[in-house]
Length: 154
Image (cartoon, rainbow, N blue to C red; front, side):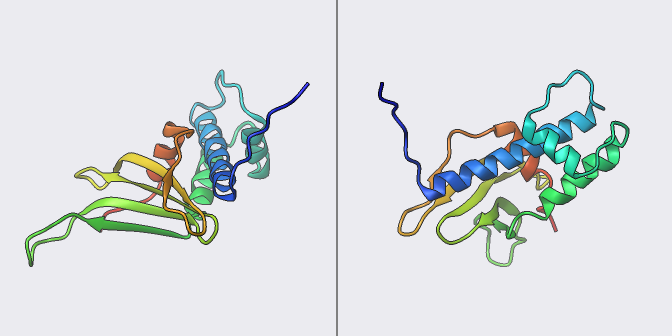
């Protein structure tokens, strides 16, 4: 019997690791928001709850700890505006959350609504000598939750 294995690049492995971590944090956060009602948790989400001292009662403080940990994970959070008339007010229209640099690099990019809240988010990876490449095997809800943890306004 031959088993086929698919080699993935360092950039793809980095993206998968980050996506798994963000998904676990989102899952644990949702568990806390629902106060543990009727939700099966993955091993990774359980490990995060344990790491943060979840005791079955401290839903709010654990949810806050998850948010704080996630807000501390990016290397940079940036915004940019669209075209404006000279002298006009610049308004953030897009964002970038840089998660890792070098080979491999990883970022989230997206678009902001009129209230400076993300409404579209994409994960992109890059390795030495390669262009930014969008990741398609992602948990969109978890990425939107993660991006929404950051303030992109003034």
